[in-house]
Amino acid sequence: MSIKPVAITSPQPSTQRGQTTHLSYDVVNDRVAYVNGKSIIVRPSDFNFENLEEMVVTIFCKHIHPTSAVRFSPSGFYIASGDTFGQVKIWDASLKQGQEVFEQPMVKTELQVMSGAIKDIAWDAENKRLIAVGDGKEKFGYAFTWDSGNSIGDIQGHSSSINAVDIKRQRPYRAATVGDDFAMVFFQGPPFKFDKSLRGLHSNAVRDVKFSANGEHLVSVGSDRSICIYNGKTGELVKKIENAHDGGISSVEWVPDSNEYFITASADGSLKKWDINEGVEVEKYKVSEPCSISRQQVGLAVTNKYVISLSANGDLNYFSHDGKLVHVLTGHQSPVTKVLFQKPYLYSGGSDGKFLKQEINSKGPKSFPMNNNKDQHHSNYLVDILADGDFLFTIGWDDVLKKWENGNVTNSVELPNQPKQLIKIAPGIIVLFESEIQLYSHDLKLIETFKLSFITTNLVSLTDSSLLLTNTSANTITKLTIDKDLKIKQAEGQLLTLRSPPTLIRVSPNGQYVSVADSTGKYTLLDANLEVVTTRWAFHTSKVFDAQWTSDSKYLISGGLDGGLLLYSVEKPSKVVKYPLAHASGVSSLTWIDYDPAKKAGAFVSAGLDGTIRTWQVEL
Image 1 (tube, rainbow, N blue to C red):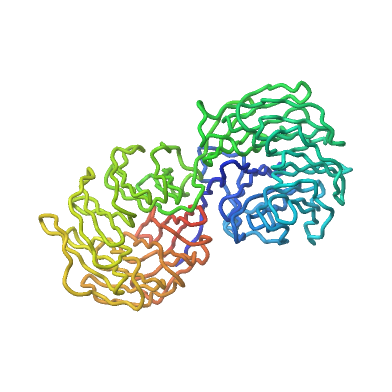
Image 2: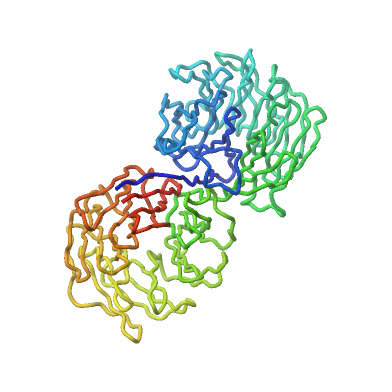
């Protein structure tokens, strides 16, 4: 038996309101890198939108704290990434093929450069020296060599947080930083030392700064909607463009191999291309009309084929260089909490309330889901997804039960408190709460409410008239019955007493087995009479979050807080297939997408708290 990874669906960049999210472009290998949670995502910038599942994605998960900055080295061999704790990691970003994309890249250097969040990083043209900037108590920037971490100058001249930094590509090197103190500071070096500070040009926080390819010009943009153009060698102001956009400007990038044109991204929902000689707009890229907060543009990367902008809601907008919007890629920005396969679609929900749909085939899901109506998403953590024919039901921590049809909410009801789970039985839909059960009809009419005398975490239907649920107060399993009048009653006696509180129950498709997981990750397998079959399924080291049976009821795939995937066999209880650290921070949800009992092979999808959705092949 074996579990083999075959594909990763990468999440969207993390964004913060009022902050620029810097995207990094590798011109050598035509790749884009961005931050997501505690991970760094690296993926091609040029691909076929019809075959997104074939896109090779690399995910770096070795930061302990949320990542906040990323930058490719000019050679494309290394990436420097920073987190909110002030740590910078430099790691191998050379191209990998096949299964190697699942392996974590090797870290070359780790440095604690400041006491706050790293907001931006810049490399010099020789791939040797870096400057990291951001928040800090003692300093807002640090210049160092990548291999030893030795200081190569002082980044001074700012009185508050530095938002961006760039280094001129030609010798003699120059560097520029911009920050919340409305200033652009110019440096000579290395070793980098203060040359001049230009204040009064911007009247609000300065968000980004970039040197042109030949180093002749330098451009800064800010929340005051202004663009300032400087001499790249001396740092002196050349010209200023006021009211360049109808909103604050978050990012600026030069057109590749061009010293005459640069592009800006703004909170007004648009991008603009500018002629540096004339100081006029020559092209406009409009994301949406009218602009909303979620459509504010907070990041930018200009590649050989596309102009890629980042919306505040995490969407990546692909424009051709002539200003046409080619594609909008939507995905999860936060941990994925639930996945459900309803052929041919995979539905997924996130901790931010997003509910998305994507096509799936033998190679896995497309790397970015299709758009749906974001205004109808849950406003908070999406807890569970249930399919019933052509309809879908979802619950979230906004205490709402929603019914979906064709991507739109057709009905919804307010719930009395925070829901935990949805299950389907013949009369309708059951919503589980911590100490309560509610039965709804298919059109979301409340039929029955049953109060529990204990705390529960999970519920399954044994038959259409009987339910099993965990009793964490007494470390046991409790049985409920539903009579012909749809009244819920608690059965007499306790069925099973465990050493630890039970947290998860799963009934096999043929109804012959019931698997019960406790808070330590240990399973107890029961038969149809609820008698113990085996207790050997004990290979998880912490709580189980989800488990799914194969259609022939012979195998159970399990995942949990320890981040590993375990495949258990009913016929051989002592034999288990392990794939450790399948997801950083834990496996949150699982669903089978294909299984052939005759060939004893199949495929399943896992979702993780690292924000990724991964496809796996199984041979039994």
